[in-house]
Image (tube, rainbow over the protein chains, first blue to last red):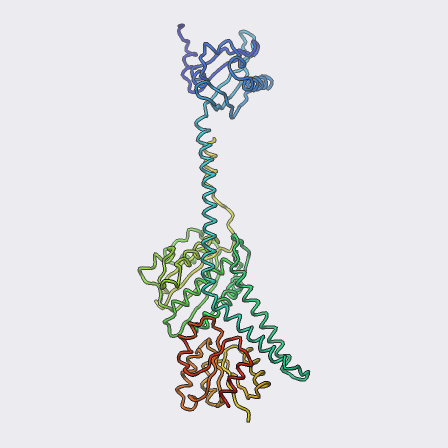
Length: 415
Length: 124
């Protein structure tokens, strides 16, 4: 064995594969370092003096030759981000290669110098990560579907709770229509002043029943979250229509204090109504012992800084200082929240109601729906200790800047 | 002289239509009270021969009004017809109706001919 020159020694200790082909002499290999031996599973003694067609498959050799020719034609360095070679011991090996043309002044030959880095492991981890990412996306989708199903299940539950009240609200207009028919079926006297009144009342009764039934149908329909700009007072009107019977039955006095010119909020009406119905019914139930049940629904627009100031040291991570938000408070004068229950209110299946009177899902689902709207729902006792307050904080614009961690990670690995 | 009927129900439209029907078909003199908390005062001044009461009303429900009427020596003998749109029969038995004793309960939407027959029976 001949003594290695310094250059050969350096080349053999490089962590990258280096090879040189003599383009003037049939692209035969004239240099093949240790790392190149390792990567290709081919010893230098076998490779030197041979060309790609002697060492690799026809397909691979064609490709290498075309790149070599391109390098010579361009007369400058060419990067091949990824190429694959079949090797005897390691199967497919992925390489990142740089090729550059060199003119050997001594012999007058044109050479192609190649430097390759083995990126097989990197590519494999990337594939694995892509696979995991795909699984993650699928799992996320399943989770989102399950959440929607849960929201729907809770909605059906609240429809059950509302059914008696809605039936009452529909039966009253029906009773009026029937009375109108009874009156008119006895013969219509053109001079009877009652006829006009009766027809007007009947028309109004039909419109009222229609409104209630339509509200219920809208409310019960299952859809993906579909947000639109809405006026909050409109939502409150719709909700109060659906829970009117419950309010009347419990003699609850409702005060609505909504700031004029409140900005629109981007809501999925049906899902947001579900939240409001849940909160109002909860408040009504909490006031069953109150001698005079008073429900206050208060809405106003504020900048986030003021909200935090008003709320002490509490942080709302979904909002930033200065964000314009709409705050909706539902305040009752009921029994308030037991100290021990404060931290469990939003836990799924937590309920203080008797078995059969609540699933314990209402508040956890309500909080989820509000979160899907980019908002926040909190429940606390009133400062004066005379009941509880549910507070909804809603953004007045939709945040589209989504952070996606996984693609960023992939990018980092790739570079 | 026409018999007098007092209608107590918070549904103004409903009472208006019922009044027209009772006047036209039954020949009754009908008075309306849409505020249940004023029902007793109205009954004392109107002195009805029969009272038609709704069950679910804000302020005071039909049961509360009925109890007030029972306590008034002047009104305790006045027959009462209770109307309810409640669909749950369990609610009917445990609430207002149980206290109502011999009071007749009719479901809403009210069958006018049935109501007229009941009133006729009560007042004949």
